[in-house]
Length: 92
Image 1 (cartoon, rainbow, N blue to C red):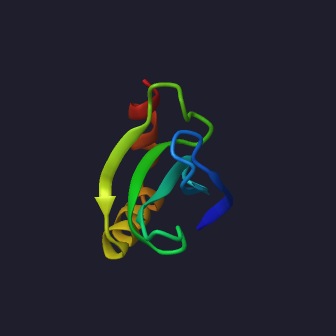
Image 2: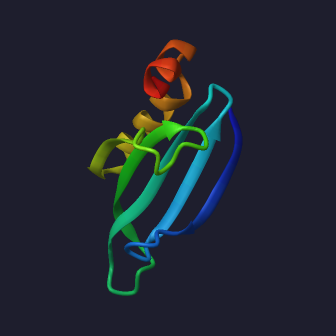
C-alpha cells in the first residue's frame, strides 16, 4: 500500500522518474531508461530504495540498473513488504 508518489524528470538524465512512498517507511524510485528516439517508449528502468525522506543521505540502495517490467514489479513489491527491522538497519 502506498501513502503517496511523485513523478518528475531525473535531474541527471532528464528521463522520467517516479517515486513511491510506502506505509512501512520505505520509498522506491524508478528512472525509466533505454528509450526510443522519440523518448516515448522505455524498455528498462533503474530501481532504487531508501527510507522515506532519506534520498541523498547515503542510505539509497541501487536494486537494479537495467530492470525489465517484471523485475520492476518484483522489486517494488519487495520494498513495499520490508519490515521495521530492515528500516532501522538502514537508518543505523
